Length: 390
Picture 1 (cartoon, rainbow, N blue to C red):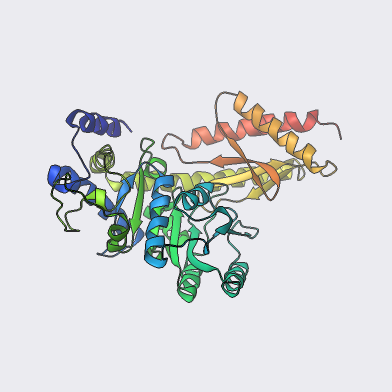
Picture 2: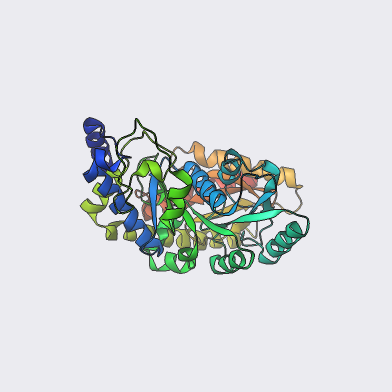
């Protein structure tokens, strides 16, 4: 968005130190205002807060450190974390960098809709407690990277309450769909989380390097991140006038808030809501169009994941082909699609099957581009199917 580039130009030219309130109170207030907007969006109350980060990875690590400080002592060797097998790998990496051993990250199987299996989750937590482990963190997905799946956040909150776990939600991709009526229904329960990660460089179409961590109680963030020294400027000690260096991992960093504040003030949040609603519409249209292709091709097309938000996954299938041959066929299909030079789709693996993934989230993607995409998929898919030897 051009306004974001203008904001970054202003931020770079002024080059103000953003993480200490007394150094730049007006710019610090702009970041605090943006954070308050996002807290209101997810349904957090007055005591909530957060910070802007470089992206979901650093935001997730900071959330894990906060949960660790709140619930653990200095020994993390028996501390365990729970998430579905569809959870982004950055959560496991962040946990490891936060001092949690790799083997303590528990991947819980997901169901046919790629949501965490609640019964298996409870079973694993109970088993770990019996064996002397210390469960402390439960991660829910509000839009997975693979399929856009949304876990049952309300039920996960209940599990977290039952076992006294910190409940964190990864909404890096899906969180800003809260702005829409359909999205807020799908993400029901996100307001009950202890922390949530958002990526404005996804759902708000902003430049890369724009992430966000929100916490239900900003005091927890401060207690896990606050350090000081004699050479530092005077801190306010007031959470209403936030010293961001004391609630985040970074001391020196760029001013990220202006690239958020300026586009939202310029266009209004309603513009972003309408664009996100359009992406939901386009995903529904695409899956219906693919359903027509499935009939036309006599089930040679499989819709592996229908859109819960704006991601869907499909693959070509020949019934008499072994799994590796079907995978090779879909690799070829993806190559043919992207060789068109008109659209760019990605591939992933779901339930040990290679699939083609459509992620509809660019503010420049409209119906004309989706129609062209489906025409290319049909043309190349028919070519690949016809060229296979059964």
